[in-house]
Length: 228
Image (cartoon, rainbow, N blue to C red; front, top):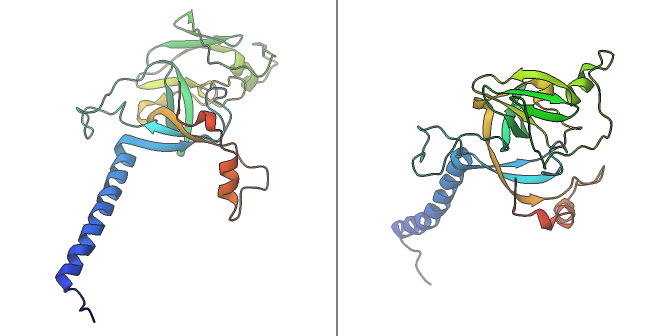
């Protein structure tokens, strides 16, 4: 009968197995905290750019401050108009939203008949999608919610904040209704779609076969697509 290995040998064997696993866990936690984050899109507010059910990889370090870990090694820049951001919802920071930057700190944004202007100049927005042919007027008899969707008086963006809109302009809760987003609420820039599948049919998506159903619904043409 073969004798059991000495205790020291068993400890070395266990350590040789555990070390790579521990290193992988530490790296995953570091990446999750400082580099990347996964985000699932729950609503159609960014269609046709980002779809309900898209799973996004969010670049967290691109806007990192100078004192952040590895800040001198990783490419960083300031927020630009047109960036698609994932951020904590100002009215409930437990929730995360995804929208596009339209106006920067200190700029004045306005909307007239669905056309967006920043500092008096109309933006060219090929990504904007309008699902409703109706344009609400600035008539006082129209509800404020409808008026602000299509008509917005000149509004100055505060310092240290951003004005964000959903690309699906007629079906988006955004800065038109709840105001600007403070810089401190920004989680990062949406980088790419790492997986995409529409939500399951009502009442579906449960049980042991749920993963198989999700795989069948996968929109393969969107996997690894860049978000722009």
